[in-house]
Length: 438
Image (cartoon, rainbow, N blue to C red):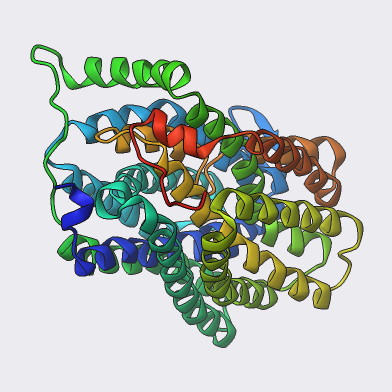
């Protein structure tokens, strides 16, 4: 009997609620507050100086996002190899999640003279949370059979939008009523770590069962030597024996970079180009969270009829249109609200379907290692998009012109996704695609 066959609805709910806890980091820290807050601090101190180099204020946060992923490129696949071979996978996930939560609380200490500290705490927290998410994502094939993964993954993202939205609403209220906006932002950033830790403990910590390792580490090899060797061997094996999964991963690397860079820089873009206030930015992000619930569930229903891959491609075409509109026509705050609605509708669907499609093409017992490579470009931690945006802004001096550079990631990523044969990829992974709309 497979692990998916014996999972309970309570355990699945506990797994899904990880997204509820984690999304507070995405919404409050990454999307809504930290980028504009660090931008404001950097502008007041005439830029950020690191190792004798001056970094433009609008480029500092995108560069911090890129740095976090450079670390993850080396670390996450190695972590995945460890997670697949240990009986303490749940404990590993929870330790990393709690570490990220503690680091977030440190953002309360970031003030005018500590911009670099804010960037460093963000980088470390991002690495910890993304490492936890490698292990978290690896539970999906164990919890759900192939035909249920789109639905369960989409529901998890819906929970994430709800949790992130509720916490953001609380932050919105605090910032609106406090006269000292900077202090209010610091309180919100630091308290996000407490929110994450609480719900990690209440749901995955209490409901998700530890599971035995499906593979044993060879005797005589230390974890460091084994994990590096195993991750490199897995990448070579994927390219040679599972070319469809490898092609999908390359396509995902590109279009996810585009999506997640838009999320990362959107509030900074609106603050700089439209002079949007902190209250307006929080309101738009809050709108995105709650509209995103319906978007994630709606795309799951469409995928059941049209197939997950076709639905994802249609979703990415809408993303291309949104980026072009932001560059060419976005000139007012009302237009920003309208754009937020459309972005919310496609955001959750893209993330949920991308995750469940990749889960279909993973061999049993290799989930965490494969998701280690997947997570490199997941959850706003991709480095190509933020680096391209940061460099374009550094050279051109305009976030509006810089955002057009992201169109390449969507177009090329979608073009590479089109020829991927998911059914063949499932067979290459030893999975049965019969009766599944792909």
